[in-house]
Length: 374
Ligand SMILES: Nc1ncnc2c1ncn2[C@@H]1O[C@H](COP(=O)(O)OP(=O)(O)OP(=O)(O)O)[C@@H](O)[C@H]1O
Ligand SMILES: [Mg+2]
Figure 1 (spheres, rainbow, N blue to C red):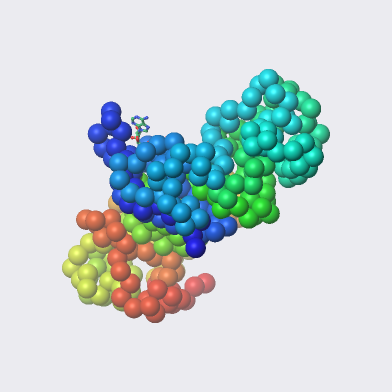
Figure 2 (figure 1 turned 90 degrees about the horizontal axis):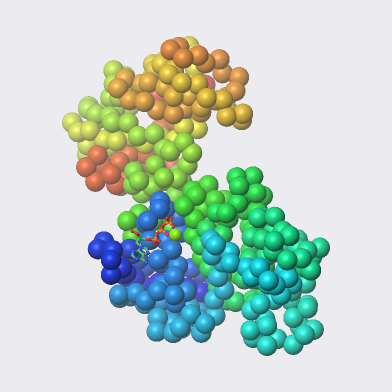
């Protein structure tokens, strides 16, 4: 049984016009961490608020633990929430803030102490229980908000951008802590972020949203590896997936002046243009010309510390390539590129959708584009 089921949820705000969510359906499995990710305004918060019972859908149903809760108020849904504005009470000590939900439920004193102590320990707040929020750092306040949400042992945890108030370093630290805590608790979690790296890092599965719809839903690495359309490939990953236009002709794939053998998947595309998608880290670079490698030119060199991010020109196209730090690259320098055939993804230039794989073997073929990999 899935913990949360959302069926055909449609929501249009009175002042909005466009649908904030447009027929969204998804299921969160028991104990799963599902991340809703997408650009600003794509409907993530609206969807979460409808699950929470804070927003009423125009149509569609929400079930929690197999029970239809669409018409139930928020407090009867058995959920716990952490929102972006973590809204902890300034006049209460950390202990009372964390235990707020327990106080509301009139939990006895000894059980209150035991559960608050456990939540505080999980969030490394044990030494701060007697402080007031004003005496805490931003990251500690955020942890109080999370402790307050987990202390009530709700069946489902909803979080809307809980890390967005933190600076970059704290975000990274707390992201890892959150992952540890949630996996330790095993609580079913629906988590909203617009940060693709956060989504990739936290989610058992990610739902990439666009314009009120789910564009793709799956385990992070499989969505990253096989984006179902150009939008998803461009949204997940830093840098975004490269997209180049190529012409299929006589079994070859022509990119600018160079050509590669076309995979079987493109056999019905003869004489037409396709869009080739390829990730920066799947492109190999060489200073020397090699058979089957594509001649290109360096435009920009950006050291990231762990690698060199190169912006290169290939015919009329510009693409991002990740090279080892040992690679000697200077602007204007010629270089040669190679990407294994199984790292190339193909998209319909009109619909932007991924082209269907012709055969299962085409999906897993490890054979290189032309010459063997060096
Ligand atoms: N209370 C409201 N009244 C009218 N329109 C709204 C309201 N709340 C959201 N919207 C609109 O609904 C759409 C979806 O908004 P939502 O807040 O769900 O987006 P989001 O994905 O959470 O974005 P962000 O990443 O910026 O938080 C947007 O076009 C937004 O302008
Ligand atoms: Mg939002």
